[in-house]
Structure formats: structure tokens, C-alpha cells
Length: 105
Image 1 (cartoon, helix red, strand yellow):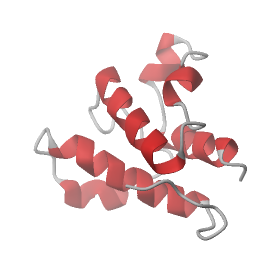
Image 2: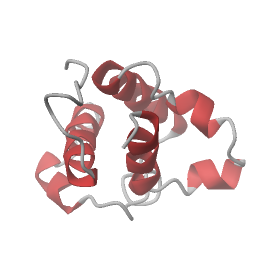
Image 3: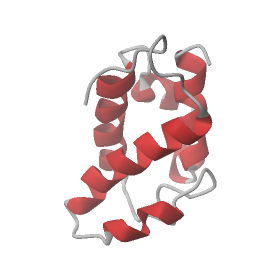
Image 4: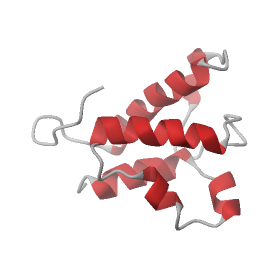
């Protein structure tokens, strides 16, 4: 995965969501999850309750986000501002918003 260049590839919420689906496929694949269901993942999908992922999986997604969008998309620093129940109830849309905000979109 290479870093996005906004000059050549404009970012939209849909592009970021599709990228996240790909990242989640990588993470979910290690658990043998059905990756065909990834198309159903939307901004309201819950990281823990809907996908069954844990906090360690957030670390993996955070690394993939930084690899794709650059170090300015720092999920760990962003989540440090959250209460525990907010991390547990994290929606995929929060990750989309983070990418959009940190990449100037």
C-alpha cells in the first residue's frame, strides 16, 4: 500500500471507506472471517460489536492507515482522547472522519 497523493487521487468519504474495507479484510482474514461480507461495512458499523475486533486490531488498522495516508493519520494519538467506552463503541465512520480531517479534506 502506498501513501495517497491528494493531487493525483482526490479523497472522498467513499474512497476512504473502500480503503478501510480493504484494510479490515487484511485484519479479519487472520481470523478466517468471511471477507465477502465486507461490502456491507458502512460508516455506522461498530469495530467491536459488529466486526468482533479487539483493541489490538486497532493497532493493526492504525498501522495500515498510516502506511496508506501518511503519519499525520495517527490513530493511536486520536484514540488517546477517547474514553474507554468510546473506543469500545468505535464506529468505522470515526476512522473515515479522521482520515478526511488529517489529510485536509
